[in-house]
Length: 96
Image (cartoon, rainbow, N blue to C red; front, side, top):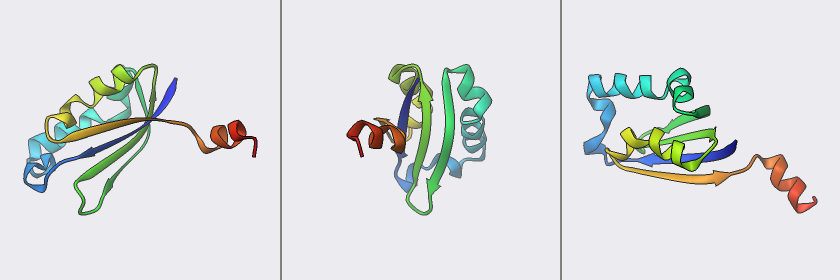
């Protein structure tokens, strides 16, 4: 499994949370159970207050599965997917 950090941003005027139906659909989509069905494990998520930015830390067998999982968010704005590592992996790799 690979670790990913995903950052979704959208303009305030396209905020999906403003629509109660869309907001509930997105909450269901980012549930751990639904993510697992799509081959994604969510470790953490956060919305940056007032920034219309949603950040997830997750793992998956492939970036393709992450892209597929982020499809609903890509319709409202950007979805930047970055391969990542836990801090201990980086420290050990650098020999510190």
